[in-house]
Each structure stands twice: as structure tokens, then as C-alpha cells.
Length: 385
Image (tube, rainbow, N blue to C red; front, side, top):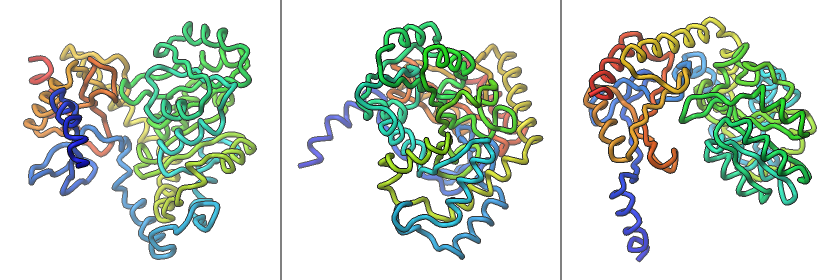
């Protein structure tokens, strides 16, 4: 009987080109994936610096499994905390120059749990319209007044700040580097408006952490406004190549989150071996200045080559959206790249607004120069045809 309830909805999704399936790869080395026996170049991973297969990280995980076992066996506040959790929080705090840090099992757990903890009835949240779904859901769960300003529109944000002047507390919430558009929030202007209007700033820097800004400290460091960010959230599943997320802020802020964030309090702790692998990755990030410089140089060069093909991106980051428009058309474009040996995925609503379905191409240090040539040739053939 249950199948009969959902079958019509699934059929409708398929008709609109919105039905999704999880794809399992038989092999993945960070550079390539193998699916149904065919090998593809991987160009849609968030493993920007190629750390997911770094030998130093894998060895740290192996050693921690032998010492601490597989699972943590409990939530952080019951019996789940192990030395790697505390060492990772300390390492993140030091890396970002923050007062304190707290771990979460994913970026979604962080945002959907933190925002309802810090904002509620009588408060106001002012959020960029293109924020990640986890931020949107956290805002909706908070029961605070939730208003959105047009993407990166500072005049729109200021209007909302004036409109909500009577709110008890106001939070400006934004992504740092936007995951589907590849552009960056103007944090210098946002922090300036926050100071003027006595608001607080919350930044989800998932896609910039470890790569952008001085020392890889993300978009706040890029704009020189680290002191103006009240809460910074980042993930360990992208540039760090692992799994999980974190938040940094003042000591009292982090203590408050530890006591009030339901997704932290009521979740089994991250496996200690995962925390140990993440810690090793953060240590590597702290010392990979030349690798970051090389990666950003590769990114700039790739954009130059795209311009030669008359394929210009709205922003010149390592996240490159190739907007196709319709959902079915984006699926067809993705399949065309597969035929060329390049693995990309179609990104469709609700991940992006209606009419802006796209291929989301990303660069990684795991890729080689010849791989990028293959992609450019494929783009010339598919996107410009």
C-alpha cells in the first residue's frame, strides 16, 4: 500500500527530469572513478586539494582505528568523546585563530542545529537568497523572523536591517563561497552593515575553508574581517578530504552551542578514527601554502582557457557552473560528458532555482594537466555545439 502512495509522485519527478538515483562507483582514487566497468575523469568532487586519498591521512585513520576502535559508542556528552575529538577541535581553533571550536557530524547537522539554538521568536534572520539548503532549513526551524535579500545585494540587505530594527537579535547569515554559483559573499560590506546596524554575522565557509584567504582560513581572511564574524561554520568533507563539520567563535558562544544545539547533543559522536584523519588533514592544510598557490593558479588558467572558448563564468573560482536551463537538458548534457569520459552530474531544482539546471564542474589537485585538456575539449564539443 505504501508504494501506491508514492508512485505517482515518483512518476511526476521522472516526467520533469527531477528523479534522482545514487550512483555507486566500483573504484575511486580521487582523480578517476569507475562505473559499470568504465573509467571516467572525476570533475564534480569537492575534494579540492586531493586530500581524500593522501597517504598521511589514511595512515592516521588506520592508527586511530587500532587504538580507539571503529565507532564512538555514544554522544559527545555521554560517552562518545575521545582524545581525537578534542585534538581536532583544538587544531581547528588554532588553524583559524579562533577562541574555541565544536565538531558536528556534517555541515547539515551544524547549520540545521546551530541556527535554531542561537535564534528564536523575537529575533530576525536576514539571509542571502542563494544560501545552502542546510542554512535555509536551520532558519525555518528557528522560528525567528526569516527574511531573504537578493543574492549578494547589499542595498537589499540594508533595507531588511532597517525593517527589522525592533528585533531582539538579528543575524545576517550567508555562505562564504556559494556552492552552486562559485561566487563569494562581499563579507567586507556585510560586516560593515552589521556594525552599523548592531547585527551579528554567521558565515558558512564550507567551500572556501582550507583554500581561500591567507593561510587557507577562508573568505573572512580573504576580506580581512575575521574579527567581524560571530560564528564561522566549515566542513571537513571538502578541502580537508574527510567528513564532518565544525563551528568556531568565542569561548562563551561555543559553550552555549555545546549546551543548546540539539544536533550536537543528540547525535552519536563522529568515529574517533575519522576525527584523527580530519586532524591530520588540518595539519596538512596548515602547511600547504605552495599547494594552495598552485591550485589557485590552475584555477585562473582554466578560466582563461574557458574564455578562449567563449565560455565565461560569473565568478572565477574552482566551482564552475555550466548553466543549461531545463532539467532534462542538463541530464542530456551530463550524459554527453560521460560519453567523452568525463564524470559530471546534473544539478537540478530544488538544489538550484527553476530554469537554472546546470552542470557543476569543480577542479581538484588530484587532477592532472592532461585531464583538464580532455575536459576543455569536451566543453568545446558539447557546450558550444
